[in-house]
Image (cartoon, rainbow, N blue to C red):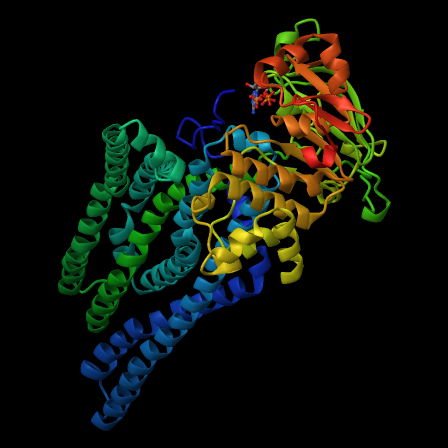
Length: 638
Ligand code: ATP
């Protein structure tokens, strides 16, 4: 199957999906009240910002150049100065409060996005994970969500605050002198057009940057894991991996530079424009003063000073607003990547009216009824072209408490068959039933509760032994942990360790030996105490002692539990009530060990090939007949 490649990020040719913006707004819905408060604070601060420039006009026109008694003008000056001092203090404090609420809201939205993404991914089917690079998934969760932080915490409020500042300032500028206002701002529409263009390029580069970051994360995740580093060391491929990393890293750094530089020329232009326009205002204002125009000549001085002060107030928010168009485009590319994951359809979900199993009523009978399965559902080819079917027309039953062993050549479809019971994949045709109920009609959670799996490759979290065991049953007491560990023949080893149950097992359990990991995994399932057990026996050879311990550990796990085992151990095969020989997705032989040997077919051939020393020959009424002629009970054999 091809690796899971999602649609490329939004580019000018492939614009962001419609509704992205509306969805971003919707993520803020739970925080409406706070957002409203922020908007109010912004408006108040913007209003406060206008007071001082207007007071400057008062100082010039009424205090310095004004007429009337000196004492009145002095009193006016003191009042004006007092207000001029108080205003920035109040607006600074309000700004601080606004920043706090802003950050809280932004962080809450990011937290919600991460929670939603993680929960969604937890419910995605195995198919998604087998066809997607882990690093790509991690990158969406951390890099993409992290990347929108700036937009969430700053941009939204800065848009509102800048618009408020710009509108209020422009209105006052207009009132002061519309001629000067037109002169200062006439060129703005051109800037707006350029900023749109620059924003689009920025979005494209942002999409590429995030993609490159995801590639780099995936590469790190693959090659710096224990398995990855083992592989590269074993094959002496470190120089190759370093080279690959350097190339991708180089691409990322170039993209980052591009992302930063896109539009820098444009912003320099804005800066130059805003820096030189006051000169034109002085030129025209001065000319009007000399000609005696633009209102009363005694008023024009205050007007020009107030006007240029207001104009300087515009520089920052205008620049930011033009920049925001560009920033928002970048963020849209990231949001698209986040929403794309949130929109991934869950292909294995509870059906309408799915039932909850009551554990005390479950008997654990498993049946496969004419089951067909293929991994690639897109290839809708009928049964006549059987190549595409991994499983074709499989029928069998496991009675409660019985053991069925699946045996057959590699790639025959044994693991796939077992995956259909807990719905790691859904059958393409036919049905898998538990106690007669189609597993698709059982709530997934309740199905998961009654099935336990011991997989071929033991996975342990990098946590303590206690935590790993409790994964099977979070409520288990220390006594129960000990009982399970004893039953799985791992307790003696645990108490030998310096920290006992509190010993950490290392990344993926690498601090434990293969056999110890298997026994811990068995103890974990014993604690879960499921009705149905799926056992995929590890093929990796253990030494005789370890192998015997694992066999002994399996015995209490299998006893009295419906078990479907992909059997590689002779002991498991012989203990089975029925052996199913699977070949090319079909069951070609079935029966007891003795029946199948007598039939002298594919099973017998495999048996002679793999267990040619024939330690155990066959079953008899009392148990198993060893090659030596001794008879042992099945329990002893297991
Ligand atoms: P083994 O004993 O070697 O583990 P198996 O009998 O358990 O083999 P399966 O793992 O069930 O075999 O695989 C059956 C077939 O399905 C194989 O041809 C395999 O390549 C294919 N297959 C397994 N997993 C996938 C997957 N996720 N996507 C596509 N094909 C798959």
